[in-house]
Image (cartoon, rainbow, N blue to C red; front, side):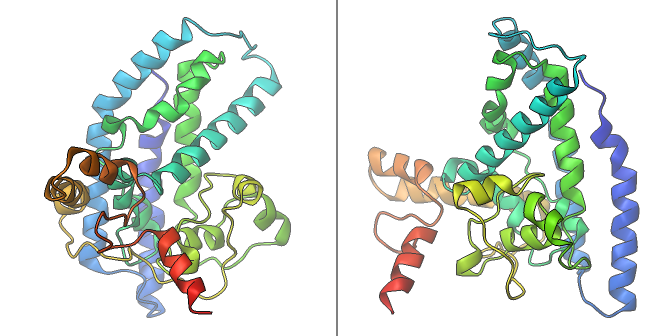
Length: 291
C-alpha cells in the first residue's frame, strides 16, 4: 500500500479550516454555519473510516490487473511521473463528469455538493459509498497500461490534497495563466453552483484543460448559489450519505416496471418516467424555448 499522505494532511486541513472560519467570523462573511460544518466533518470522518477497508480491496484489484500490464514504463524516469499525472487527472475528470450524468454514481457524489456553503469544510464532505459502488474502475485501465498500483493510489491522494484549497470564497480569480491551465477556487465555485448555467460544469481535478477541451467549461460570472437544485434538508451525516440512494430506490420501485426502474439508475439526475422532475439537459432545453 502507498503511504497515506492524505491522512497526514488532515491536521493541516483542520488548521486551514479553522483560520478560514476565524476570518469569516471576524469579517462577518457568514461563510460557515456550525451545524453544516459539523455535518461536513462527520462525512469526512466517515469517508476516512470506509476508505480504510475499500482501499485495501482496490489495491488488491489493481495489483491483480498489473500482472497483465501491456507496457513496462520506467518509474525512474521523469516522463513516467508526467504521464502518471496526466493519466490520473484525466481519469478523475472522466469519472467526475460521468458522476454528474449517471444516477448510480451521482447518488454517492451528491454528498459533496450537499452543502449550501462553500468553504474548506465542504471539501471534507465526502461520500461513504463511492468506492463500494465501483468509482475506482475509472482508474482500472492505468495498471493495465503499466502504472504501478502504489503510484496510482499515491497520485490520487495528491489530487485530493490539491483540491482541498480550491473550496473557498476567500480567494478571487488568480492570474490568467493559472486560470487558463489549473482548476482554481473560481472554477470550482462554478462547479458547486446550483444555478442552471453552472450545473454540470468544470469537472476538473487539477487541470481545467480537460473542461476546455471537452466543452464542459463555464467561467465564473456572478456569485453561484451553492447546494443542490433540491437540497437535502438535514445536517445529519448518515442522512446526507444515504438519502439520495433511498430516494432512488423508492422511485425505481414506484415506477412499477423493472425496465423503468433500471432507467432511474442509468439516466441523469432529475430524470423521471412521468416528467415530474427534469434533468439539467431538459431544464436548459425548456429555458431556450422561452426565447
